[in-house]
Length: 269
Image (cartoon, rainbow, N blue to C red; front, side, top):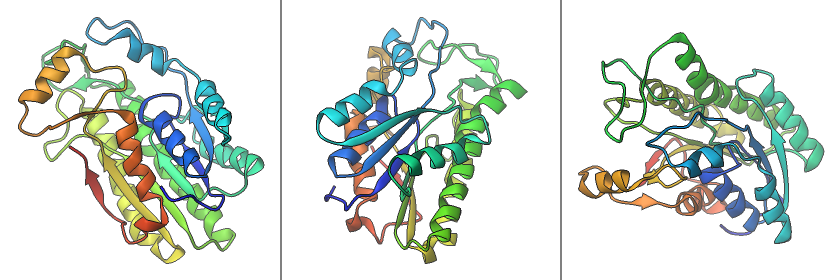
């Protein structure tokens, strides 16, 4: 990404995986970065490597320390995105630390695996739960409500200060047939995509672009040999990506070079 003149980015889910890689890429491009995160204590799952559970339980302190060690600017803020007041507090913290936010990356997920079907494990042996009000709420609060409120807060502050440049990027998953075995996850991501596409149209006059990235299978610690084998035989998948590879695309979308790219779901394979 071309070096920015003091842009400020807010990245959710920044303590590991794509979020952490994105903060590093944006900081390397000259952005000050607010690393929002929430520690998740997942129960042990035989089919999920311990590395993934460990990553989700981390703070973003190590991410921030690495950016600062390279001369960049970053802060870590714990934020429970199921709280409707969290977006306002995040923007207040960001402005107090660095000034107005002009880049918003909606990366966080409240990931649960729930299903309508009778099976209690997926094709990789991971435990499935039946769809309940609890699974729906956990998923939609983080993956749909929080991005909607963050976009709204971003737009309100942007308009109030008369800004003319802004970038929004969301992360999605699933497909035309939803996301079998992760039905609430897929549905919540579809809602976030819809919000982001609406933002691309409604906020275009304010100089804001809004896009969604659909990553390929990305090794954030959960990819096993069984998953790699699945990808290698899948007609729809090509790569098992690293978080840094996905972050490169996000960094491009928030650059000046991507000014004409808006209202797109960009599928990476």
